[in-house]
Length: 314
Image (cartoon, rainbow, N blue to C red; front, side):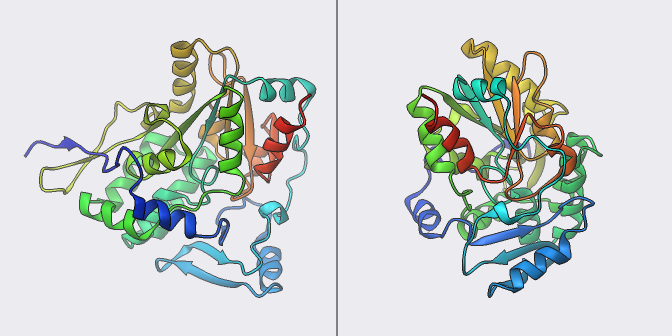
């Protein structure tokens, strides 16, 4: 049987899927996954246990730790890394305020989820896949190699993906809907640039009013019977430096001169290069990566800080 390209993603989010997402409290789960090399695990557990919160693994995977918060307090409580640009320079602020395009990473930025890890946990291979994700996001493994290795471990079928979507509505990061609306209201084009899968990301884009042709993500391939057949290696974000390539393509296609990348990982940071993103805004509200934070033009722990900067512009 010849493999066929399927992304399992509706042009618009189904009403049942949309209602599940909207009814779920923003930030009802808190992630403690790979705060790198700072020894933050014990202080964070202590902080959470002091506010009637419980520690529980997701999908039987002890490598993916989530915390359910009764208080649902802001992720700005996460420890800060030293030597980061928590306040933007005048030039960085100017570029942010006048950006013609903003590209958001999806996993652990636009959403609290790390969707590949979540899908892996759903398929009972969570720990091994989470380790590969951490390596890819930290920059120690080429992204395409990590993507192939993770998919080879998961072997997700079309049916698996559909069941996952039905049972795992996305958790949108606090402040994202308002920020996307504010950017679009200023005439700024919003794009999603992710190493995740279109099957998961396209419904999120529809929920936020982001056009499908503004989504750069990976496509899972399936056989005619729905079994796993690989992934589309022609997708820009399946390749090393893919987010930089996507940023360059966006600037060339739309003749933009000011483009901003917002994300949490090494592949997001890579987008900032000549012809690509003009600045990189790092986000540590879900996962703090000091090696990324130290290189960001501006590093925030709360998406609402970005919206506030827009609102404060004269």
